[in-house]
Length: 455
Image (tube, rainbow, N blue to C red):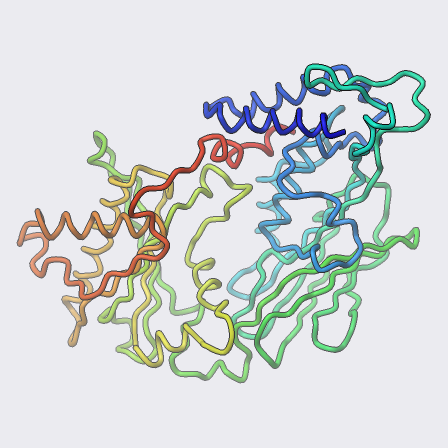
C-alpha cells in the first residue's frame, strides 16, 4: 500500500509543480490515471477518500468524540468540498459548495447571533492500507490494478459526521442555533430522530427540534466546547465537538467603551476606478466603529486596520471574506482575561476603521491606491472634528506592505493640495508582514482555488 501512497504523493508533487490555470484538471486527470483500471463499481458508497484531494483525514470525524474531531465553519466547508470531490463514479447528489454556503448564510443572522448548523453525514470508502501486502491490489507504473479472485475487499467502509454553527462566537452572551432538515447533507438512507447539543454549561445534552430556533444565553465568557449529537431513527448516533467563544455576556453590555457589532457600524464604499494598470483599482469598503467614549458619530481618533491577503474571492472553499464581521470576531477572541476591545475603546477612545479590499488578491500597487483613497477620506472626516488626533495604522500581513508603500509614496510625492497634512499619521504597525518577500507555491494556490470543482 505504500506504493499506492507514493503514487498519490507523486501526483500531488506534480500538481504543486505544474502551476497553471488548468491545475485542478491536471490533478483530476492524474487521479483518473491512477484508478483507470480499478473496477469502480466495487467501491462501496461511490465516495473514495483517496480519489479526492486529501486535505484533512476523514477518519478523524467518525462520529465518535475524541479530542481531534473539533469542527468549525472553515473545517466543515473543507470536509464538504473534499467529500464531494472524492466521488469516483456516478453523479453526486451533493450540491456545489457555493450553493451550500449561500443556504447557510440565508438561514443565519450574524448581528442577531442566529446561526444555522449544517450537518454532514456521509458513508465513504477508504483504501485498506495493507491491500498490496495482502495481494488485493497490485501497482504498476503508479497505476492500481485489481487482483482477480481476491479473498476480501480492498476497501474499508466508513462514516463521516461533522456539524458546526455558521459562526463560532457571540458578542452578547446569547446564541440562537437552527438545525434545518434541508441543511442535512447525506448519502445515507438514515432519517433524523432528533439533534442534541451540550452547550458546555453543566446542563448536559439539550434536545433541539428541527427547523425551530433554540436560544441559549450564557452568564460567563470564554471558550465553550459544544458537543453536537445526531440521533437517527435506526438507533445510530454520531457526535462531534464544535468550538464556540463567548466574548461578552449580558451583564457586561453596559460597559461604556466596548464596541458592538451593531448598531454603531457604518460602511463607506470606495468605488472601483478603471484605467490602465497600475493606475486603477477595484475598490473596497471602509467599516467604522465610532468610540462610545468619544464624540458621537465623529471620526476624530482613528485606529485604521488594513486587511491582508484575502483569497475569498478566488478560493471560497478555503477562505471566508475577512469583512468587518470576521474582524470583530477576531478582536473578541482574545486569550485569557485581557479584553482588547474594551481597552481599545474605553481606555484609549479610538474609532476603529477597517479597510476590506474588493479584491484581496489584486496587485499590491493597485490596492495601495485603494488604501490611499481610504486614508484621504479618514483625514477629510477628521478635518471637521473639534479635537482630531493623528492616525494609528495597522497593516495585517500583505496590508503591512500596502501601508508601507502607500505612506512612503504620499510622503515623497504627495501634493500639498491633496495631502495638506501629509499622512497625518503618528504610528504605523505591521503584523506578520513579509517585508523580505514571500514564496507561496502556485500549485498550492490553485488547489485552494478550485479543488471542490473536481466533483
